[in-house]
Image (cartoon, rainbow, N blue to C red):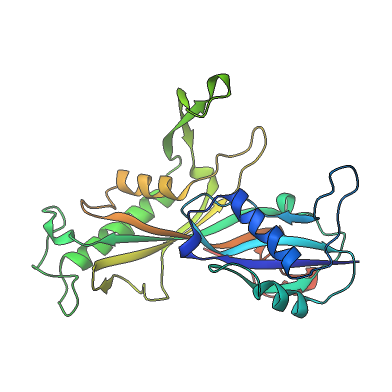
Length: 291
């Protein structure tokens, strides 16, 4: 018996597949790779694979986690090699390791997630409120509207983090008679501030300040959120809602829009610190997800 935990990448090319299709792709790959997976008992046995929190459609990820319970020992290296040889394009195992069998399941242990939001601003100098020197923020230009936009966004980030509450409106749909068409029956206001643990401008991977691209300007934002679950828990802040509250605080100019979202991390909590689910109890030399 062996239990292997893997961190997977769900690339941009498959960000629109559902969580169910993602699970099916993993299950098929396990069979094709000849992994000695353990199965549940009963009339309808299923592979013992446990997944982390589901990823919303349209979001890419470099931090999808899954636990594989094997009937025989295989080793993390061999497991990764076999799986990556059969996984479909856009899906791959980035790392894996054997873990103790008494570790909590991912669905219980994971308490937080981090995201990279990329905001595109191809026409920012057209906004009078943000306008600076004409052409600023474009490749080869001097300081101007791009720098001013960055300052405005930084100010909005500070105001959001200083706010005591961040109210957003959510809609709840019901599917009457089991039909496929939802009927909007309820709108409610929720406070996402308790879930927002951190928010900052990205300072790496080409987003050191305001980055210019051939298509225009873009800026990266890193967000860390607490995951809610169960009655009485906090409302988990969604990436699009974070952008919405930034707009409420004047951080998003006309013409700026969300270009992409990538989940960059999932975290467990040990001794008050956020750590990768890949780390053992004795691997806590450096904290993760610090904002």
